[in-house]
Length: 191
Image (tube, rainbow, N blue to C red):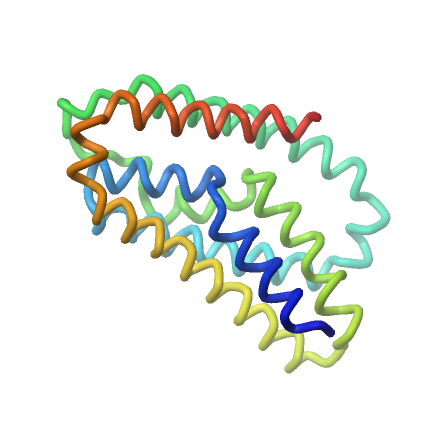
């Protein structure tokens, strides 16, 4: 396996803006880093779980991917558009406690996030199973990928915390931009 290509692919796929990262940034802006970290922990657990499921069910998924991808695209795109709308209409002057940025919502988001699902479906057969078929090697690979994802999520929490004053000052503009990015990601799934 080309470790450099593997690490570059994992880093680009997890650190670039996507639904989870944008929700994390929005959560930091509205409710702070502590609340966003709960979401990030859940997102990490969901991300790792999805990688495990992908590794275990790889052979099965390869035979039924077209059906799964269509369902994931529909649900994922709809959910991403819903999140874009929620971010767009966010009123930061009302700082009530958000019950949606929880461990469980972060966990479940990974299973509805087309970017993460497609990543899990591609990284396991392309970089792992093609070269390694022992349980320890696959386990270490999944742990490594999960830690890269956790690093991405916490980087977005840190980014949101550092730039919180800027984000709050230009809140409406930032929310519109984040909503546009999410809507764009949802639309790009179909193009």
